[in-house]
Image (cartoon, rainbow, N blue to C red; front, side, top):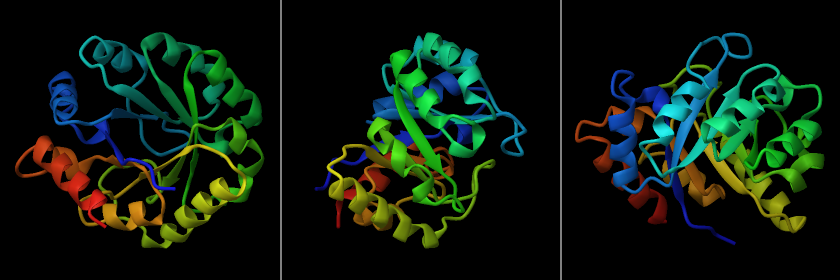
Length: 223
């Protein structure tokens, strides 16, 4: 069963000196979500931002805030991100000892819960917690840096995950993050994805974020 495609521009590729302006631009251009890549320089080799940025932008945007925690011990910051205004927290199963407990903690804080799968992480690692998940995020690059090339080898993982959802009567979004553009969007949507996270393709587009989002949405919906 196909679902409407939703777009989630990643602020990691935005102008760090004009986060609020870029957040407004992509929301005005029709983006349903705003994606925050939170990195701790431990789980991934980079350091980005935290709940203070979420809190600041919450005052400027009515988009759904889609927060991707690429950090160790995500359970330690769930409440902080909830209070800052996050709508969804996505965690990595390798980053915590008790993923089931953390997913419950996220829901108890009033947010939706997501689980991210790195290129080398099998679906089987999260299969038993899928009934608790609102989104599975398929990483089509190795996490930690923006601007990486799309890994076409992840397409079968998207297909397998959608089939598993349908087989077991579950209901979760499938997001794809990494190298998403107007060129790659049709591949992942055809495979079963319905949320596209795009950074460089949006904020580095020669004609601006609005034109980029329009191109990606048109490509994704023209199959």
